[in-house]
Image (cartoon, rainbow, N blue to C red):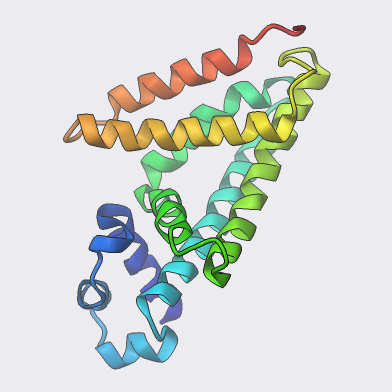
Length: 193
């Protein structure tokens, strides 16, 4: 039941974001009673955090699995197409990006904000490792901090999706083209400063 609630809520959060997703809409999406949902989650915030944790874990696992079959020298180049494929196959993973932004707004000292940072760190670490590997092969400037490059790539990808959603009503082609351009810029960086 918990997994069903989280998956149903992920769809709603991916579509509406945190602020626009009323608890009644989240409950209706599950097809369960309000009591059944509240048995597992005492608030919209706790449900959103569970969605963020579960979907991020799923996301990182899928990316890690897909990249494990790619030769070491091609992982950075394969990263963005892999991300596009996962997003196309499971649009609910966008809930991670939306909820990260929304739950972070709860304040600097919020325990939820700290948990959001912890959840996202695994993703930053994975991308940072891929960037570090590319740096060792001379594909990315070695003088750049791999974690900073990872944060820039993740931020650019998430921002590209947000801008795409603002500029278009449907279709993924402009988003895919933009993501491909981002990927080309990442792997085309000169090996030295």
